[in-house]
Each structure stands twice: as C-alpha cells, then as structure tokens.
Length: 234
Length: 308
Image 1: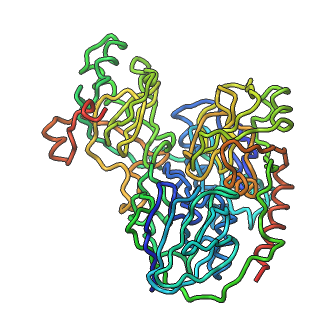
Image 2 (image 1 turned 120 degrees about the vertical axis):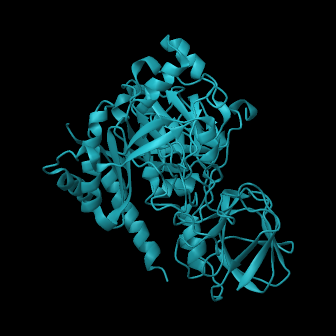
Image 3 (image 1 turned 30 degrees about the vertical axis):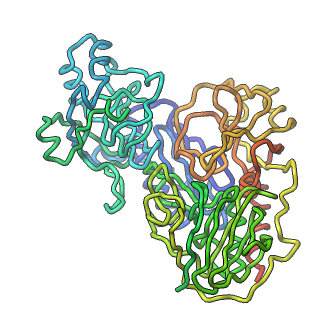
C-alpha cells in the first residue's frame, strides 16, 4: 500500500490506497474509512469508498484543502488492516432459474460446464463488497471465479427485475430495484436490498461479505419473491 | 398553514433542497437544486435557511394557484413568469393573493427558476432530504421521487416577511459565453498536451443531451492516454471524458462512482452558472488551483452570509 492524496474538487480529496482490485484491499479500506470518519468527525460530508480509493467530501466552509490533507495524513498514521470480521457477513438466498436468470445457459456454455455447476461455483465463494454505486444499495462484489467471468451484454436491458442477481466480468451484484442494466442475469433474490425504513438503509455496506445460497422456487415465493419471468419485463 | 395548488406541471418541476448527504457510500445520489445559489437567494428573500425546500422549475410549464394570501420568493432564471397575466421578474419576494395564478411559460434568461415559500415547503424527508430523484424513487411530494403534477397541494407554515428585492449588485448575471472555473484533477496530466490546450482555449457548446445527471459539452476531441481507471467516487461538477472525447459535466443526480478520467471539477459558482445554461449555448473552461478557488469561494460566501 502506497497511499496518495489527489485533488478532486473544491471540497473533495481522493485517498488512493491501491492500484489493483483485490479482496485483500478491503481490510485496509475499512480501517482507513473508520480512521477518516473519526478524524474528520462533524466536518465529513460524505466518504465514498470504491475498490482502491476513498473519496473524502468534507465541509469546505470549515476546512481548507491543506487542513483536510493534514486530517487524512493523521488518519493514516500507523494504520493497521481491520480484522477480517469487521464487516458483516450476509447470506443472500437466490433462486437460480432460467426464467429469472436468462444468462445461466450462456455462462454454462462459456465455462464449458452444466448450469448446476455454474450455480455451484457462484454460490460456493464468499464475496467482498468492494463498493456501492449505480443505484441505492447496489453492491459491487467479487471476485467471481475466472471461469464464470463474462462481459456485460452488448445492449443493456431496459428493465431488469428487482432482486436480479448478475455477473459482469469478475464481479457479481443484485439489483435492489427494477432498473435498466447490462449484467448477465443468473437468478433472483427475494431479500430487500435497500429499505428506507431500515437502519443503515442498505443491507450490504462496503467491506461486508456475501454468500449466495441457492433456494427452490417454493422457498423463493415463501420469502416474498416475485417470480415474474425476466422476459415478461423486457 | 397556507398552501399552493399545482394547476399544471412538467416532469422538470421538482421539489428540491440541498440534497442528501452521508449516504453516498450506499450508492445514493446527492440530488438537490442544480443552481444552489439561486435556491439560496430565493430562500434569503424570505429569511429562510439557504437550503429550505423550494420548487425548481426548469424551462417553464408550472402553474400554481394560491389557496390563501401568501408571500413567496423567486430567484434564478427569468421564465417569463406572470401573476394573473402580469409579468413577474425574479430576484424578489412578492405577494400572491388567494385565487391568483402564478405561471411560468418559457425561458427568457437562464434555465431554472426557484420558487420559495416562508420557512420552506413542507415535504416528506427521505434519507434526510426532500430532493426529488425519480431514478432512485426518493424525495418529492410523495417521498418516492415523483415530480410535481396537477392537483398536488404544497403547504408551508412560515410567517410572512416584508417584501424585498435582492440588491442589484448581488443579482447573478447570466451573460453569454460564461467562464467556468475548473479545479484541475489528478488525471489532467494524462490527456495529450493538445487536449489540455484545447480544453481551456476553445469554446464548448452545451449538447441537447443534458439533464440533472449530467450535461454533455461539444467541442474538440479530448484524448486520454492514461491507463484505464477503476471506478471511484465522483464529485459534483466532475468533468468526465468518455472514450468519444466529448466531456460530460456531472450534476446533482449523477451516479456516485464512475470510471472515466476527469479533467477536474467545476467550482460551486461555475456549477450554479452552468445550471442556468441552455443547450446550444457556449461556455469557456478556465483552469484554477484548488487552494485559490477555495479562498475565493470563502470570500464569496462571506459576502452572502453578511447580507441581512
């Protein structure tokens, strides 16, 4: 780790911690986040973590850029990676099925294996939440096993069903709400991913870990899932 | 408690305030008034806090009827507003009597007008703000991101203030070909020399592809030679350059992270000015350093705050 501080905007600085996406970044990212929140305290407006960086948006009416740099430097002093368990671990139930995950067969073909093997490979790994973005509660997770990596669709869908679980390159994610989207869809979760009434709003937070647990159609329905086929939305 | 009845509206007539903060790490966009300065002035006219909830009217099409005598304030664009057909200029507070209609028709100068009410419009607070973001189903009169529609009733319950104008010397002028200050960002050295020269010496024209997420600028092709970027946080006013070389200035409703290289970011005053520009209009970009822009901004804000 070789931290750098970069100018972003009048009241924003970027703390760049790494140059590559890696699961091993996350304990450092979490530790740095905690330290930054503590050192900026009430002057922090937003802290946006993403893969290798932490964007610090502070109150520019109180802090000068120089003072903000000092606070960042202070936060990095003697930084130690967080313990592996400092983020929460979630289990997301997923109904893997062609009707809600139309790219299951494409991924199986690409990987040269069966659909059930795709499901096994996707659900056996514990993923890191690298960042949230694109939409409220949309968590970019990885890293997906190399054999399942697939580029985004050439033409994004206008409507991807809420709860859809997808893969893009070596990342996986679940759509918290219906939206446009270009990820390869493989299943659907009945879990509420973003809820304005819940403390913290988003089920997944940066630095959390996630496991996908295959469930049957009956369980999916029992958990409140909507099994409208993806095709019916397109 | 008084209220206004919305008689006609468009999808671009929105409840706004300063936006949502403390939730961007969850993928929630900032939102809020695109021209923060005009919103602040509209609120100043009524003695409100600068970020009290206002109506942002883009281009026109809003018409409201007063259900009781009230005093409101208008700042920002001149959208040929009328009260029962009589012209009403912005940058002042004004009386609207019971039954009178305030209507916004078309942009004469600027793009976005801000209508404020005593103590601000009452609106559901969602994640700390009433800012309307349709894409995220947050804010607005219903709390789920809906714009204003005919039949909506907006309430407020502040005390009526003496009517006043904004002192002439403080009224922002929306002169043609405005200068937009750009704080240089970390990737500036990764554009070709020709590109950085062109960016700050040739004129840019606002594309019609412009909304509250971003405004595309048309001009010379900017060539980025650096390594592909990993998505990272993007600030308000970021000028990102996608592979087609035509920059996009990111506004309040932008996504929270993105992976395009950036020239830098506009200053807050430049953002306020850009929010008042229309497609087809020209702007100039001028490079500035963060420290100096920050000092200048503090001086500007001091002047604003000291004004009673």
